Length: 222
Length: 137
Image (cartoon, rainbow over all chains, first blue to last red):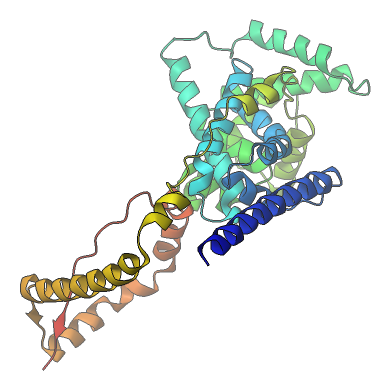
């Protein structure tokens, strides 16, 4: 009786392991065709599956990266992205449901960007928001960009927009980036920044006006 | 400050989206570095099969039943002794409900609670709930 139970337990254990492996490989295969759902990935990441976390990283890193870039510039960008995903990995087991994941991810990005901004403000690192660095970044973009179709005019506009974002206060910039560039609804932006929707609307209004003025000074009118 | 018209707003937003700054590519080993340096999630401790099966079956069956019964008795008696019981008149209760019902339909306040980070995440430690008892005549 006793040995039979132990056997059963081992069989069950092996079966569950095999099932988990099959699930992970199925998700790998599905992800190649873009079919793996966010819920499945997050569930397996919560169980500690690193390969699934790799897929999650691949799926979201570009969003996180561009948000951090638009908020903080290129200084320590790789480190910031890594920090965001470390925090995601650590916090994932505490996440209640997958439907909050995207908002939660942006919240972590926002927190990391805020910390970075504080560091910059303290003068620990040289701020990237000056003309020379922007020129360097523009050069880097030119060098690393593999799409030949992007013309010089667009690169110029990208540079102007980035300088325009730098021209805004950090709070206004965050609202504009999340709402206008990342196309998130105002409600979600409010959840990410932990402010009322009214504050988001007000900040968006001021941010747009301020940015429009800046762009007009640069010879771009609407 | 000038107000932006709807058309101007749309033009501005589409211009920004079309020309949003693009970051440079990540360094080649960033992804692998990240995956390599992930620490395993802390797992809940489980007793090994040996430990479980070395405990005699009689103890594992009888002791928990006794403990549960004793615990239940002790808890119910001590709560009954220690919890202050407040007598509420039905009229007082009615007045309280009438004077406070407005707050309950304030949907903004209610939903705001759901949107906080604490709502997304599982609680790390459970808080003890204060005992409440109402006696109505």
